[in-house]
Length: 244
Ligand code: SAH
Image (cartoon, rainbow, N blue to C red):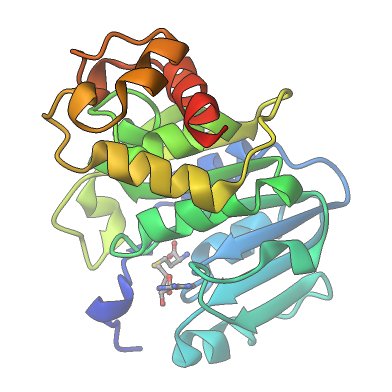
C-alpha cells in the first residue's frame, strides 16, 4: 500500500502505544466509538479488543476505506468521510472519539469536535506534539486551545517519538485526552469562534485596540493586557459582555 503524504498518513506501529491510546479512552461495555482516520486499521484492531458496542471509522482516503473493510467484525462500520466536516451527532448521542489524527488536519478536526460537544463526552487524540501541548495548556495559548478548554478538561497523556510510525513524521507526537465539563456555557459556537479568532489576530496588540472601553470595563478586564494574559474565565466574561 502506497502511503499518501497529502493525507497525513503516518501509521502507528507500536502495539504498546496503540494499546495505551485504546485504554485511555476508558471504554465501558457497549459504548459507541468513532475512530478518525483509520488508515490500514492498526488502531481499529486494537480498539476492537475493548468492550465496544459499535465502532464507526471515518476515513477520507478511499484506498484506506477498502483496506478497513477487510476487517471482519459485526461491530465495525467504515464510513468514507472528511472528519473535519462530519456531523458526528448523526451517529449517536454519547460518542467517544479517538484517532491518530492526520497532522495537517488535526486542528480542524478538533475544532469540529468542539462544534459537536453535545454528543461527544470524551475523546483521545494523537496530534503533533506542539499542538497537543498547546491544547493541554502547556504551551502558548491559541484561539483553539481556549475554544476547546471552554468545553472540555484536557489532559496531556504522553509523547510519542517519530520512530514509532511508518513513515516516521518529522516531528514528535503527543496524545491528549478530553473530557467534557459538567457545566457548559450556553453560547453560539460560531459567534464565540469568530470572537476568539479576532481577539487572537495581531495577538501582541493590547486589548484596548481590539475591544471597546465599555466592554472591557463591564467585564472588569484591564485594557492594557494582551490576549495571552487572560484566563479561560476572562474570555467567557468578555464574550458575554460583548454579545449583549
Ligand atoms: N489510525 C491509523 C492511521 C493514522 S494516519 C494508524 O494509527 O496507523 C491518519 C489517517 O487519517 C490516514 O489514513 C488518512 O488517510 C486519514 N485522513 C486524513 N485526512 C482525513 C480527514 N479529513 N478525515 C478522515 N480521515 C482523514
